[in-house]
Length: 495
Length: 59
Image 1: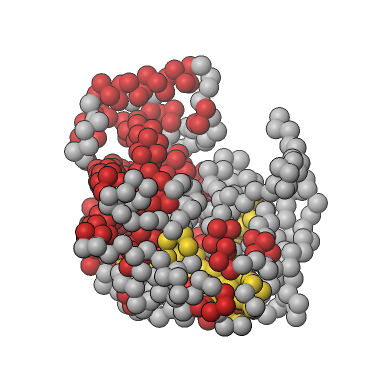
Image 2 (image 1 turned 45 degrees about the horizontal axis):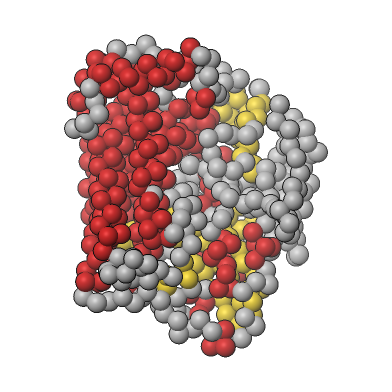
């Protein structure tokens, strides 16, 4: 909308948007590592066999984090034992426990389980920043075309005031401490046991980042904190400029049809969403993968499949010479004793996510201080309402909005006519990563990354989960169907 | 060559299915499928563009 109508948001709105997105990124990455991904690498049942004294030694050797005594780890282990003995593993009930692909010693497994539980408390705390700046989480409510809908006034109880800003700073410090002292050290301690995974999961080898986190209000893509660009065929010596007009979507293998045939790809401004399910009637054994087989379209950049996400952002930033990213990436590579080529892998994806979290958690404090400085010198502007009234709009307009969401490049394209939306197309991070094949038969990133992945036992395919989870899939977080009278649409009996 | 299907992939947000052909202990071919229609694009058609963010952020 702001792109379509040429609206520039005030500096305070820019900073607040960066803070909301940035803390979301930090929280999301930690949740992904501990709660969505760690159990592909950490064997819960092995943690029961650990000597808490050894776990304590290990924890103290990698970090100054204070919760590291043998007594502490013994408490965690006792809790876990109670769960297991009662036959109620709860969160941990379904796993491929005891699978030969699990390589961590019991002491490391116990440390990871303790941090899994600590991260649950931590994430609830740090996302209070969304309550401060966005009124709630998930789905902050204070966005507004032209800026934000949150009053700034250091002396008002009903505004973003001095007390709330003090709490925010404290939460940002809490966020950074956990990332520096728990998350990143854990990733670096676990990775050496899984070094072979730096050789699996590379995928398409093309990386796209829209860039994000504007450092001023010019709207200039060169003024984004995380840079924009495209890397092709793993060539880190060259970052290509990114032009959104080179993005198109195929539906050749997707359950949609285009008005003028499915062979041609369309730019999102011309995009169509005409669902046409041609798959088998459930329950079925396998999909008809030679024809259409997914509800996701196949986006391509210059005709190529692209990986998006923390790895793409870190590679584009690294290859562009971003100072903080370069230092963090080089630091992690040195700690693991590998070169940049190791990043093109399942393990690289996990490391890049942790590195990004570290760099972001540091930068958030600087952005917070900028906001405080603006307010201190009396700049309380938060919204630009010049083009709020549709009477000020042209009859027709089109724009694109971009964001680097935690999971990757997110783009929305809009066409407006007579004050209403005539076309709106979303190409979200998982559209890129989970893409099916295109008209040429080129595989999407998940599909490519799985080729060559070892599978020790096809009935316990933990290795496939490792690579797919390393992308942090998100198909649709919160699309719910409900009727106007809130009546049930359907009832499902779960046996 | 055994073909396997993992559906749903758990510990993610949403609905994802992976089919894979396994040959000699390695994945020889793979297919990724989202098994859920989202349709946000259709929900937004005809609406006031100033409201779009509130709908679209639910994705």
